[in-house]
Length: 230
Ligand SMILES: Nc1nc2c(ncn2[C@@H]2O[C@H](COP(=O)(O)OP(=O)(O)O)[C@@H](O)[C@H]2O)c(=O)[nH]1
Ligand SMILES: [Mg+2]
Image (cartoon, rainbow, N blue to C red):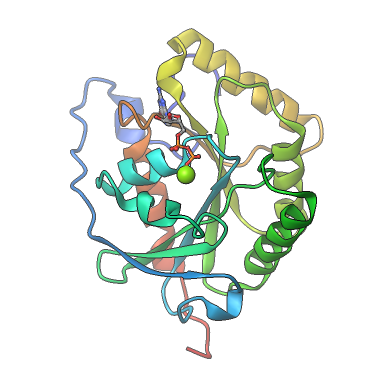
């Protein structure tokens, strides 16, 4: 996508048609912590559509999750010691959907063995969680495409798991640099992919992209069919 419109491939058409249209004020969402799990089997029953957020440590995941639901401290729950390495479930709007805060991958401070355990836990969750509708992969818009992020996305694609890219910290770049960064990322993806996944350009600082991301996510809810077993 070129030029001005960098709201995301699945962005708000109303605003694309009329950039001066007033923005919808997204009210805070009711969000409650359900539980932290170390295994997929321990996760809440898969009866509601689930959306997972993942990215490297420091990418801005907690800040974005807080901004999305409109609570300052929601993601803090999953930052309590011991919980950063777990699958953290939140119920949004009284079980309308589940938000999952996954451990960051490639976390440099943990040992190789621990990293291996995380990645096995995350892989198992991603491949076996029946109600997982979409995974949002966060990347810092200021950085060139990183091998680890690209490998993670390639793995998701290989497993045929739907995902979207969420560029974070847009406020740290000028508009022109944001466009360049997104185009650069897409160019890199198109070296090995036929098409790019949906993407969102966001800032937890300004709230940019929040509406488009929530619209996209909520648009996926009606197609959810609860697994038979629940
Ligand atoms: N300017 C700016 N800073 C951000 C944004 N999102 C996160 N940060 C900062 O980046 C650092 C890491 O954010 P955090 O949400 O804890 O990242 P996490 O480790 O991925 O959960 C913190 O200092 C945040 O204040 C953003 O959209 N804009
Ligand atoms: Mg965090």
